[in-house]
Image 1 (cartoon, rainbow, N blue to C red):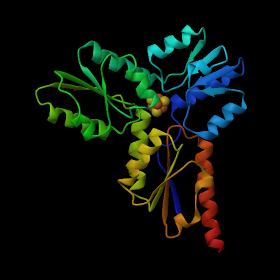
Image 2 (cartoon, helix red, strand yellow):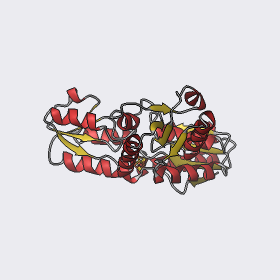
Image 3 (cartoon, protein in one colour):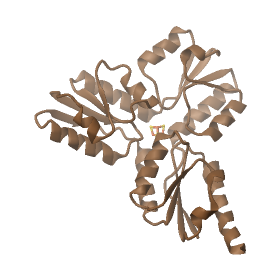
Amino acid sequence: MRVLRANHLGMCFGVRDAIEMAREAASREPLTILGELVHNETVLDELRARGIRLCREIDDVDTSSVMITAHGASERRLAAVRARGLRVLDATCPLVRAAHRAVARLAREGFHPVIVGTRDHVEVRGLTEDLADFDVVLSEEDVSRLASRRRFGILAQTTQPLDRVHDLAACVRRRFPDSEVRVVDTVCAPTKLRQRAAAELAGRCDVTIVIGGAHSNNTRELAATCRRHCARVVHVQGAGDLQAEWFDDVRVAGITAGTSTPESVIDGVQARLKDLVKGRVAA
Ligand code: SF4
């Protein structure tokens, strides 16, 4: 069995920089991270081991410094953190910041913001909490529920597949032919590279392994992309999830990974795959 890795996979610079910022800050002072810094238990365990606290609600923070994750936060949420007298370390990814600027500009210029994304995702909450009016869509059915507006401004959660953004924008245009529809591409470059590389890889493999946290939106999207090109796709969180029988009749296995998956976890999966192959030869 040959094992191939996608040309672009794994942790993006935004997540890597945020983790580095957390480690560095925690070496100086007690730190709480507000929300999940990465959807990856291996990384979260390592941060906990350094004494970093993780919590979801501002009211639960009991350190004087708090970190906003790469997913970003609304001005409203930041104000609530500051109102408690907490010092804010802001690890918002610059590409999420660009999406915040884009949505604010659309709203300022009179476009009704429509965000292509997952409604309850922390990044989408950050993008929308300061808006007076907006919609979040993920499917054509969601578009069918939109009310008519003179101007629609469409943008995306940074980890959405670009095809979906264009498809849903086309759907809005068809449904409201008299409205002005402006699309701002806020899908981040690392997501585009990983999506493209995953599609290319999956097309060459008998089975494609997608590595990432069970709650990682971008990992699930990567898996969905792979399923369009490969009949067998498995989503695992690490080497321990691999099962030998998945590879019984496999000639080529591919590996890709979401933007919060560390290199060490990817290497672990690859090493385990090699062991499985060796075991099969020995048997
Ligand atoms: S997925 Fe994209 S937007 Fe999100 S942290 Fe990584 S680089 Fe930034």
